[in-house]
Image: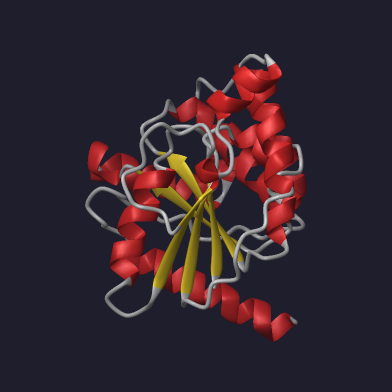
Length: 235
């Protein structure tokens, strides 16, 4: 089972890849793949590492590019990368920290065909008024990747239970953000777009988890297996 782990920079993808992999190892065989050529430190030892083929720093030096140009070049190179077909039960693919170039420039599409499912992480410590945009990003990513998706609010260990419950309910249905007093015009527009996308992708559960403490991992695994089961039924 190939699982793409995506989300905005700082959402905890690498730590999730490490700890969820360790969690799965109690019952499954697991492989970790690093697709981030710009990462300086990984909290796990990848079984396949894109940095063995190229790094963001090398591209900047070789092509005389700045960080943004090198990021786009790295995404293009990712499309040509030949990743082995692993036979393990789970292959966790840790994706680049910059979500936009990877997902919306076509880098992720190169892996969508081989991915059975995507896990999308949201940083739950962000300002609440940004969450309509976060939800929209997750829906747009699912549309771009065209894979089943399990969404999760990460960093539960850094917020209180009341906020976690509130965010879970809101992310289940972004129309609830309309009740916020400080919702901006942009956020309102995002909610309108999200409502349109929700006609294609019905609201799903959005569990609060902690990649640090592994709280909520049982829910994530359950939703992954349920989502793949529904996919097989429809196929």
